[in-house]
Length: 319
Ligand code: ADP
Ligand code: TRP
Image (cartoon, protein in one colour):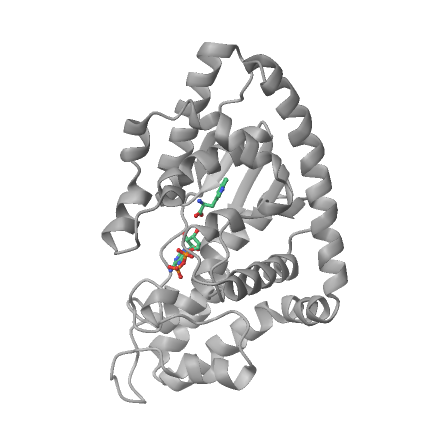
């Protein structure tokens, strides 16, 4: 199965991104032919300045590689290195009725949030359709907010195929079952917009400080603690198997330890889980040529597929 994921680079990654998006995505490369790219043309629709867009793109490339994208298995590139996608985007525009785009949640939400309406924001789903259709993608793993974009892609492809024959492959979306919403230090959904995130790559001391800020109940030391609604427990359990979770529950119930102990324990869990990634990250940060080579190889592989596809599309429509 050919699987495609696009990533919008938008700053530092946190524990919510890691368990909610990256880990499930990286696991896909074991079973599937995975294509993954940094969607920097998409980010341009809301980008504020060149420096930030460049930096975010670079950071995301390194973060994904160090967390486990294996360039020998997975094709990994930067969207703007495969220009063919923009040619297809224009062609697909003809098959994208205004009514369809006007119903786009993402566009409506962004405008409601005060982001100035522009054509890039409006036609964002058509570019996403081009990403997907250019590679004969069969499966697109997405968060719930992106399902509509895959449905629009199917509508656009169907319209195209009805007029010009069976050329485009209709993709299916796949929502990772069971990815719970991970709480931030205040118990609300962890998000970089809520100032409640625990970032993945913090220095050790800063990480402990951040963990110390997790809101918990005020049960005094010496009394049994309830783990059920505790944010520290909720975060720690992400790193534990069933047996370890039960062990932790018993520690909560024993009354021998307080929240401070569990905050230290959580910090250790995070620090350990990311040990290998941290080392790889250091390596890639000081070997950016290697990162560029990996991305160039990915772009070359993608371009070869895209060019062949574009030939058949252009032939079919008379360009
Ligand atoms: P943020 O809310 O910090 O801006 P994004 O919207 O950029 O995060 O999310 C990127 C990916 O990480 C999405 O696939 C999203 O589903 C996942 N994700 C983000 N926050 C969480 C969370 N708290 N719990 C689970 N998954 C999350
Ligand atoms: N719109 C997606 C997001 O914001 C990113 C994306 C762009 C994408 N093109 C894609 C995802 C193609 C999957 C397939 O998360």
